[in-house]
Length: 203
Image (cartoon, rainbow, N blue to C red; front, side, top):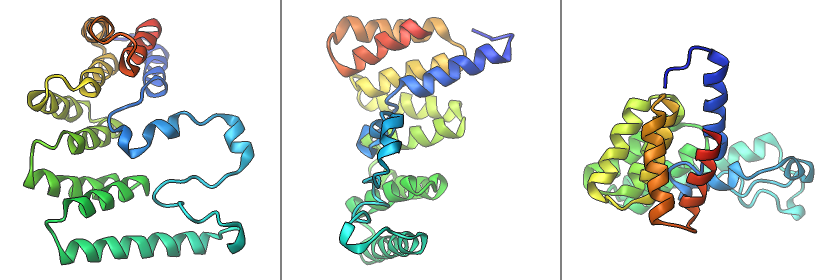
């Protein structure tokens, strides 16, 4: 589906970004997409890798300096742990996730790839890598990585749904419909099926 009017394309693209729990839900991306204005009014400190533990009332309101110091300390500890044991994929992934949460996707990608060098069939890591490519707008690499996941695990529902999203964003409406309808038919009542149903209604 090639859009002739740019505002139509942008509307579909905006829908895709809003409708999806895209790729690696283990990075808490789904929680970020569920935020509503009421959450903002509560002014609560987000509990992600960067901000967790900073909202202690006894410590007072965290300043920018305190946040930066905490982030640097966390990064330093993870870097030291990886340097001491470069085969510790748990720490490498923790650091990569932390970098991604800190809006450093390129650096995070480097560490995700370190894990994939050791085990290229880590579909959980590939989901995170795909999300980086997708958010960068590199849909070709996002599709390639998603297909790689499906080669290793053809029944990976996240990857199947995500492939539909990539198709929709790149104008392949019929291909997206086929994937999402198949998910709805074969996996009724699941979160992925519900997402696919919502996506179809708005496509």
